[in-house]
Image (cartoon, rainbow, N blue to C red):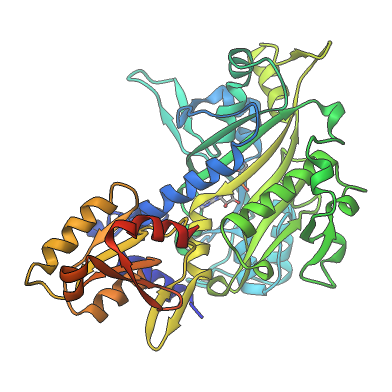
Length: 486
Ligand code: GAP
């Protein structure tokens, strides 16, 4: 079992991630990924791209992080991307009103209006938890970071609060450049910025974070069909519909059954997303669920909204990792209105604004979740049993001792292996210490060069999870490792 401080210490000790600017006391909500962290993050992002961009007419684009005010006027973020906040009249402390009340009254208040939250504060005589001062009426705060663009005042830009808008404002360009055909997918993997009132829980709520988002543009008249329907209709989804909330934490239901009330196009992508978590990331089945959001809880742009959640011991239960969002023509329609540029396509003999299904993933939250889910402690030693496809280092190579040519031989093998696999050369400390270090970094395979290597050109390879060892000829090493890992 890993609690949040165990994950925090592991992440810092091994250099997965740690607070930024620490020499100046840090800036809340900003983290740096160290060497192991960035190797793992890159692998996670690449796996995501390989998995979701395998469809015909799906592409990756890379728009800027700063966009003009008009973009967010059109998307609704200027008006609606707000959090309810409450300020203490005495000490000036500012709280996010709904989560503040949740921590004090131990109930959830998601979706309540500022007026509703003010009423709860009054009825329960809630005071500032820092100084016991009276609280002001609940107000709202826009979560976007604004900035001046250029030297002259007056041109305002915003750091994007989601990657998605970059795909919408580029949609028509890409549609025309590619095959003038839908469905078309545009993926963006990159930073997003939100001025969170209370960043918390390490990298799961930051002010600068990474999203992997896929916007799928499609014909709204075809929302009840999908080319892969026959293949997925009997696939079982793990879900918590609104109607089951008071009774269960999740149920299993086939795509066919769910499609009686949710469009097939949407359900098909729920199946694809679930397969990403269970098959590609190897998340245990009992740790995953889709949670349906009620009308009060849905994001302002969504008609249908289910979150993907993972059950994390360190965060005391299910935590949102991403969402499947039916955004309809909310965004393209908004951009058409504000920019006065038609966003319609002419396709299959009709003119229309495509609808959008968005698959949204928080890369940092997933990485954090993987550390939580694959953390294990065996005889006082930490073993991070990450799937090989996302473990930062695939193979560690070390000499049994640093003499008699063993270290040179180990280095020679390392130099060859690193051309094909993420490899790490280690020669500090005892063999047991080097194994322990590799286990803690989540490295699935260790290779040891010993005295027999010098005689017969064989090495020992050791499997992290079973700790079993076997002798392998150096010439077969890469093939053997690749076969084991596949
Ligand atoms: N484009 C849709 C969108 O942005 P969202 O639910 O607001 O939807 C998607 O964000 C995902 O981004 C979340 O499920 C979460 O994983 C991640 N995310 C959101 N805010 C975050 C934050 N402050 N820190 C880390 N990750 C965050």
